[in-house]
Structure formats: C-alpha cells, structure tokens
Length: 524
Image (cartoon, rainbow, N blue to C red; front, side, top):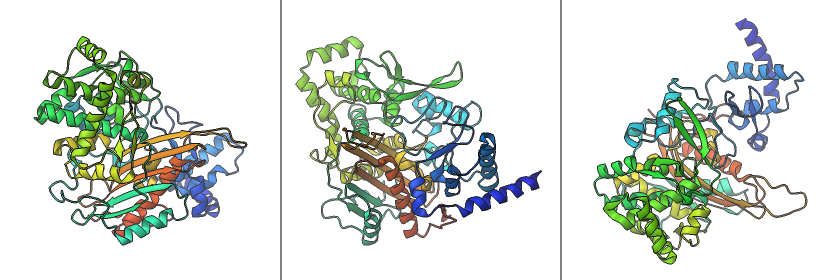
C-alpha cells in the first residue's frame, strides 16, 4: 500500500511541478488558501495558505471533477512531499481580530500564566501539550518561554540612537531601495539590524513621513501604563501585584468594539471568543494583553483609563467605583483631555521621542471619547523604530518595564499581515499592526478589506529574531507604513517582510535557497 501511495504521489508531483508558476506568478497567488478538509477554516479543519508552499499553487487550477478525490490528492501530496515543514497557522490578510472560535490568539509566552494570571495562557499551554482540544498549531518561532525573551541591547549598546545625522549603512540602504524600487512611492520604512549589537546597521526610506497610528497607538498606551506603574510603585514586585491582582470591570469606556478576545472557561475546560462588553472582568495584565494581542479597542480605552487613574490616585490605586465616577464627573473634560495626552507623552519624551512626530491622542472607543475628548494622533516610522530601539536597550521606562512590554508583543498566535510571511515561521516575532482604510464610490471598483480607494493606511512594527531560540540569531527592527490605494496592503506587507528577511539573512550568510522555499542556517 505504501508503495502504491508513493507511486501516485510521484505522479502527481510530476504533474504539479510542470505547472509551478514563476516567482512573479507565485507572488500574485499568495493571498489564496485552501482548506484541505472542506471550505473555510473550520473548528476541526486546517487551512493551508497557498503562499506558504509554491508547490500547492497549481492545485487551485488542478482539474479534478470529483470533490472527494480532489481533497484526497491534496492530502496525499501534503503527506508525501511536505511532512511537517510548514506552519498551519498562517493567514494571508487578517485583521486585528484574526481568530475564529476554536483558534488560539495570544501574544504573551505560554508559560506566563502563574506569574501574570492571564487565564488563557494556561488554556493554550494545555492545547499545545495535547491536554485540551484546540486547532491551531504554533510555528516554531512562537514557542519561546519567558526566560528566553531578552533585551538585545541592554548592557551592551545602550548609548546608540538614531537622529537626523545618523548615517545609513550603504549595503542595507541599497537593499531596501531595491525592495521598494518597483513599488508605489507611498511606502515609508525604517530598519535597524542589530545582529551585531555593537555595530547596528540603519537604513530608511521616507521614514519621517507622518501617518495615522491605527492600532500601533496601543503600544503607546502600554508604555503609559508601565510608566505610571514605575512612578507610583518603584518596586517591580509591587507592580506585578497590581497587574495581577487588580480586577477591573468593563464600563461605558468599552463601548463599542468589534474585536473578539479569547476567554478560558476552566470548569468546562474550553476556549471561547467574545466581544468585550460592560460587566466583563479581567485583571489589569489581561486587559493589557487583550489590548495588544487581539487588539481590542475596548481594552485599549479601559487600559488608558487605568493609566489616568493611577496618575490621579497614586498609591491609593485601585480605588472604588464611586471614587472613579466622582473623579470623572467633577473634573473638567478639558483637564481630562490634557491628562490623557500627558500620561502617554511623558514616557516618550523621557527617551527623546518628540511629541510632534509621535502621539496617540484619542480613545479607541466612542464611550471613551465621550468621557475624555481627544486630539490628533500620528507617528513616523523612524520614531516607532526608535521606540523599539529604546525598549531593546532597556531604557523605555526601565529594564523591567521594557522586558515586560516586549513579552506582551511576542507573537504567539495565528500570524497575519507582515508577520504572516512564511519566511518568518522559524523566527520569534514581536509585532503590532494598525490599519485605517476607507472607500468612496468609483465605477468598476469594489471596496474590500485593506484595499481602500480613498485611504488605505497600514502600519507594521516588528522585532524579528531568526531563528528563534538561537544563541546567535539575526535580529532586526523594522517599522513599515504605507498608503497605497486599491491594493491588498496586508499581502503587500507580507511580501515585503519576506524580501527583508531574505536580504538580512543573505548579508549574514545564513540564507540558503531550496527549491523556491526559504531555508535557514543556524550558526550553531
């Protein structure tokens, strides 16, 4: 039987290889995906993005009238040709809320439950251990423990900074321009290669252009939270107690949201997903996690509110609900607005990030905006790159806070947008993305997600360590912003991520092409 299977596998492989498209054609096919157990990414199905494996691209056009036979062919080729060489957790163009019921969505390292009290970490660890039902398998790069996450420049190169006079590294700059030369001019990017921490390599293209932050602004709220905790509770042990033991119930600040967050029902031993509504209760660490990971707008406004309350009540925090209501009711809205901006501005200014180039000024929900009027928000790729640089140096508030924020960014979920590049499957990715698109009537144009014809902003910030867990990985920081109309910007960011990864690995002699797929060389 095995011989027969291999014979048919060889036959199908030959037919498929004859029809493998060119590299340019594969790029065009990249968004497509097939679920080998039926249409859609169902609870028990596994969705295999065609972009991950060039060999599968021709199957989209493979002539096979029999529905069942077609899926048997897919199963056969998958089993024979590519056993366990890819991630089944990819996504071509996901949104901030990326996961359906039954699929894992998390950022913090899986072993962090006991220390943080983030309940779903316990659940997802059980799933990965095979002790609880779940569908999504994490790529290799998403399986680091807390102890393996480190600040790459702390104690090594804490004085390096990027300014208007910082020279670009010629080879990196040339490679970056090569990646962008045939693309629309509305891309802005800044990149810092810190593989050799003593000799960072910087490159940038239009990196001083202002963009609306979208959900990238949630990283600035996270910064404000850890700043206020450090100011009021200097002992890190006290900050851990506040984050873990402070229970916060959602109120009108959480209205309204569309992003679902994962919930773990320990009694039923299952994971479910829901939109946060008034009455839902989480500890402060979980609120921060919901803000950064599934990018819940409700969580962002609730966390920002807590930042203001810590600033107001100091060591008396957390305070009672009547005290909170009295404070918000008796304080002029203009003063609340000024306070909301200040608590996010101050920690950025402390590390030299100028307010005129990076600011989150408006709550993420209507309920939050009604309570606290906002101002404009914006950022540049260069300042977001500097934000990541300061974090890697342990200077974003302090070393403890910088490390905790990096852990909250650790991407251990179904990857999407920039992070969904199959070239990053073996890499640890610390990631946040933000989008803002809109459409206007245009003959022959159909509005789609991330393909606006009026505006089509997409921002990605990422720290990539490749391969994950190596003692000597390639490490680089990248901030990419774009506003290219009528293209799928999520797929474009994914494609650029692949090209940047290849460029970095080639420079360090760790890239080895293999039949059209990415190959990684671990120097160990």
